[in-house]
Length: 186
Image 1 (tube, rainbow, N blue to C red):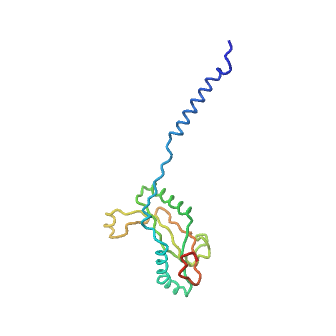
Image 2: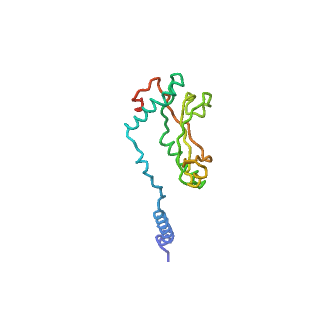
Image 3: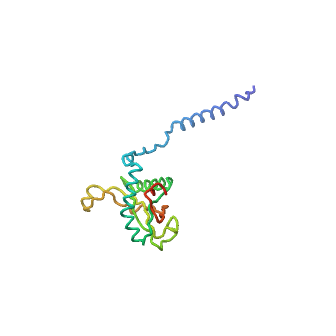
């Protein structure tokens, strides 16, 4: 007696069916990767545009006035920018490096700097930035209380020498006249 075609392939069909069910269960049962929740402590540090304008104007009338005088009337750079993607990428890099080095309470300091007039063009976002002030980002880790006492320092953050800082920001060399509205992107 001949076995009908349908029954010849039943074993194969059942095998494939069971394997498919098992695979689907495994895929559906695997939890999605857990994302670290975003800390919302930044919300306490938000300021209004009016408060930002006060800070900008105070800098313009004090520090920048001295810088402009020291540059024979030529103003220095006043604002710096990184794209969101650059910032996210750098933060991810710092977190990964800190995790590899088992560092806790990692942060980022923002330092002021200045490009020397003869600074290599490939180390700036644009060659015309030579001679202007800039900022750079420095990874930090919080010091333990015992370290603060031993070193006699009040700074809680210590620069992490084994993780690279970031620069190459876009900066805005200012026009010869800075108005009170310069914070608005003018």
